[in-house]
Every structure is written in structure tokens, then in C-alpha cells.
Length: 495
Image (cartoon, rainbow, N blue to C red):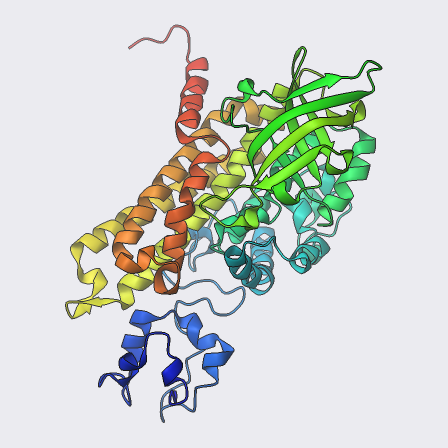
């Protein structure tokens, strides 16, 4: 029971709504939930308006069934969670270790990351340092780079998982739990640049370089990004125009050129840069303090919290010791990172799509049209069926590929899984765009409104195209997958 007397004049929707004969002094539960999300009642300013509970009724304002209002809680909405997390189902892929990590990390995301995500997605600021520090304390930044030597000796998530047992399914858990925040720009701003920009340093940098760069990045004190794309070359990596020329004494590189659409670029301290050199391409780690590096924010469809940048390198003098991998073998360095990068993006994209399925199922269940629940309309059930089928098939395919990754070396993954990863990313982002379109139709005007009931739908519809472009455009990835398949065709095969 709420007393709105002193609030009535401040009601954003106007006084008339509150004075309606079906609202004032009545059970307005259905009307309220047709206009507002449950989280409104949890805000301190509105919670103070509650004056009691109807006699004989349980005070359920903090526990609405299907609403994951408690940190770490699993949703009870059908298909809101991957099958392996749903009650009564089993999985051959996920062990008790994976489940413990999921519980701990979801709680961490809900309590620490989610509030900051919602705030920064709107104000456009970088993730709060307190959040980055909290993640560093549990070595989450290091875990986001997947299994490897970089985890040796670290205490992961307070010891829940040991470094030697951490595998790609543990990493999948991290990627998918992070995607639940429903803040696409913030998600990329949460050191996504590290996920794609630091592996070349770890895999191809000198020991001295790694000792100097990696600890501060894992601690969330320094930031790094991958600077490959240019206005002149996106998926066409071979078309890069940024140049690196050696000084006469051979001790430095002089770098000139520009990079565009670089995630985390506005606030990065380090830049993993693809450059054209005399004999081909070379990847070089540029440090902002070298001088001559200018970054400018690019306004895109999602939040500036991502730090998307246009970067200018003007006669930047870089020690040759910052070269990553062999000189003129940069194409190998760049391509070696693409499979993992695309797999990470796919993990997140599929989980973000599932969040939209959950939103639509909740809305179809509570929304009434023509005196009946929205799901009573056959066309709505048809859309929901397609949405569920898409996300379930994508998740199943993802888990199959992830299992193969746990059984292969990095080199084997490049040979065997490059095509499959390209295909699943293409599939996940195409189905995501179909789901976004269907979700807007289900929510109607609310689905194109940035606040209120459909805010996650509007956000997803506006930002899903990032998934379809970053890491390689859909058509390019599809073509890659087919070309990989053709290479493996037996020479003498005939119909």
C-alpha cells in the first residue's frame, strides 16, 4: 500500500493518471506493471512512499517471481538462462568448478558492475576506477584473456578456480555473465581493448616488455587497445596505410598514420598498432607517453563509455624493442588473435540476445491487450518461438565449438576452427538482429523509448549492429568460413 499524496504533483506522468478511478484507492498492480518496471519500487525515493501491506497479503514488493532482484539469483523465466543453468537439466561440458565460478561472478556483476554500468552507459564516462580495482582484486582482468601461462600463480575469484584448471568454459561463463548488464557501450568500455589488444603483447612481446606492461594492465591501472582498423581498411587488413619506418641507426620506428573506430582508444595508455613496413606489415606497441599520439572521441550509436576513438600518429618515435613478433610478419600476429576475439564477441552476443528473449517473455505474460494477455495472440507466440529457437541453437553451437577449443592447441584452433567461429559469429549477430526487430514489434512504442519498460529492447535494437561489425563484418566472416571449407574439400570428390 502506497500513499502518493505528497508525490502526486511530482508524478512524471501527470496527476490525471493517479486520479483515475481504477487507480486511486484501488488495487493498481496490473496498471502499475503495464507502465513501470519493478525496479521503480526499489528506488529509495519511491520505497519511502509505502505505508503498509494489505492484511492477509505477503509483502512481496522485494520478490517478484521471475525478477532476479537478488544478486546472483538465477531467473525462473523459461529460456532466460542457458540450459546448463536451468533447474533439472544437465550438461556434459560444465563441471562443479564452472558452476561455482558462475555463482560467484554473477553476484559480483549484480552488486559491483551492474549499477556502474547503468550510470556510465547514460553519462558516457569510463567505467569507475573502483569497479576496475574490484575486478583486479579477484584477477578478473587476467581471466578474461582465457587459459594460459599468464594465470600462473594468481588467485582467481578468491580461489574458486585454480589457474591450471581454468579453461575456455570458465572464460565463456565470464563473457556471458558480463553481457547480462544490458549496457553495450559500457561493456566494451570495461577493458574490452585489453581482451583484444594485450594478447599480441603476451604472445609476441619480449619478456622485458611483458614485465613492464602486463602487470599494470591486469591491475586496471593502465589501459591498452588494438589499433588496426582505419578509414582506409576495416576487414581488409592488408589495406592498412599507417606506416612505420626505421631510423638510420635502426633503434627506433617512426610511425605515421591514423586509426579509426578504436575501442578504448580515448583513454588507452598503450596501442597495439598494425603498420605497413618496407617488407610487409609489422605490429608495434605504441605508448602514449612516446609523444605524437592524439586521440579524439567518435560518437557512435552506443555510449561514449566505450572510448571509441580516432587516433593520429604523427612522427611517433618508438623503440624497436616494442616490436611484437618478427618484423614484416605482422599479418600473422594480427590474424592469430582474430579467432579468440570473435569467439569472445559471440559469447557475449548470444547472452545479450537471451536477455531480450527474457524481457519479451515477461512482457508478453504481463501485458494485456483486448482484455487478454499479450501471449494469447498467435502472432506474438510465433515471434517468441522464433526468438527462443534462435538463441537456443546459437548457444548449443557455441558450446560445441568451445569444447573443441579445450581439446586443441592454439595452432590447431586456427586450422580447424577459424571457419566455424566465423560462421557462428555471423549466425549469432544475424539472428540477434532478427530478435531485435521482433522484440520492438512485441513492445511497440515502448521498444523505441530509451527509458521505462522497453529500455533494454531499445538499447539492444540500437546497438546489436556493433556485434555484426566488430571483429569482421558478417559477409566477410561468412565468406571466410566457406573459403576455409573449400580448402578442406577432397580433390577427387564427385557427386
